[in-house]
Length: 252
Image 1 (spheres, helix red, strand yellow):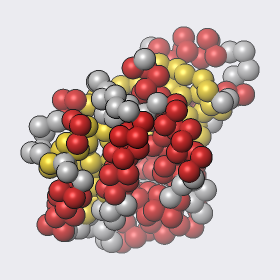
Image 2 (image 1 turned 45 degrees about the vertical axis):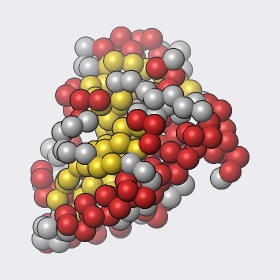
Image 3 (image 1 turned 135 degrees about the vertical axis):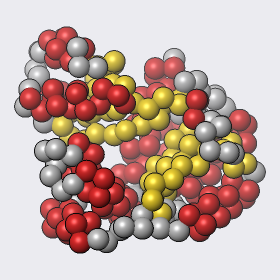
Image 4 (image 1 turned 120 degrees about the vertical axis):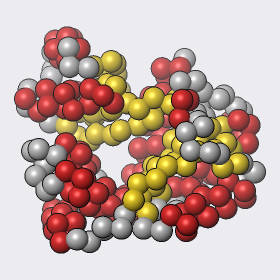
């Protein structure tokens, strides 16, 4: 059941991001800027930039936007951007881990705290909840690249960090530990596998299961975090069932 919940949670979060395409562009541009400043403007030698550019392609961001973001980073724009994280609890014991990029930490923490307070939650100390999540890498590729060779692909990737391979709706989702993300990505590229998108996720060790109506209410609280300008990603340990995803799809 935990495995099912994990994939459902990933699918839900990606769907929510895709529905907010304009904000996704802004988040990816920030990621590109920080990636260039951290490791240079050559995606061949900067894996973080390579991931950011790949994700820009996956949401159909124009190449000109990507190049402008890289040039701005080279020119010094975004020097004041910092990566910060916040952790806390929402009602019913739902743990939340928030990744941000900001040029004003005082503004960001005030906005994060305000959402926690309004939603009946509590902002915690940094590091207090990190143990509840494990960082994992995900690669999304089209199944039709492999035809009947999925088992062969799985066997080849195990030595490079593959932990799980799931197939749903003609999409293969490949999961690995964060520490082996780079080696697995390089192996896929060496095999000339076309990667549709990549993600670095914080996957919960355990899930909180609530009734559908309560789950939907908590998800609205999580959306309030996602709407904040400085927030890049929000992770949580709320179990998202297929029935909840169906309700969300019907509402959209």
